[in-house]
Amino acid sequence: MKNICVNFETWTIADGSYSPMKKGDIEVFAIGISYQKLRLSIRKKKQLTQKKNSLYLFSGEVIYCTYLDDPVIVIDTGEFKFFISDYHMPDYKCGDFIEGEGILSIDSYEWMHIWHEEGAPHIYYDFEIDKIVGSELPEEQDIDEDSDVIIMSIHKPNDNELVELESVQSDDFAVNYLEIKMIKEAEPFKILTIEE
Image 1: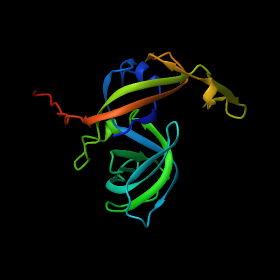
Image 2 (image 1 turned 180 degrees about the vertical axis):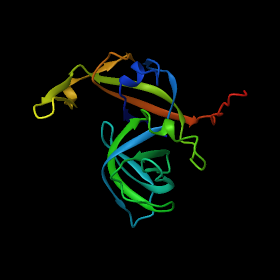
Image 3 (image 1 turned 90 degrees about the vertical axis):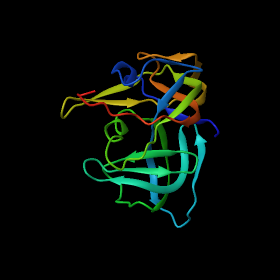
């Protein structure tokens, strides 16, 4: 499989979901996508095509759906499987082919809470980190004057604002892309019980 580029949010290191990472590390991830466009496809085609950085065009088959809490589906693109979790997502069913465009990201928490559910497919893979790219540009904060709520937005850097890094830590750059290569499907996890 070719390398893919994914977003990585460093707060997931600070909260303990992931450890700091460096180039050459082998890590186990599930991948999700935040879609910008999504629709049923009349073509029964599986593909994943990079547009820029972590932005991809995709098409594939829906192989898992749950609408119990947050709507979550799993898409098989032929190269690998990823999930979509979104309140506004249309109701798809297993066997539907869909296509769209969106940002690939390492799972921050959504799939971590679903993978053990009955019928949920195993979508964790061993990936080798080939490249880490970040931007020193900080998150921008504004205060909504009506509610005193802090609004966070991350500056989307230009290519000339990105620098290659050897590692990524919890207090590193605001924007991080990992270029990763899938090695194999990860070994299935065992759910531990109190008795064990």
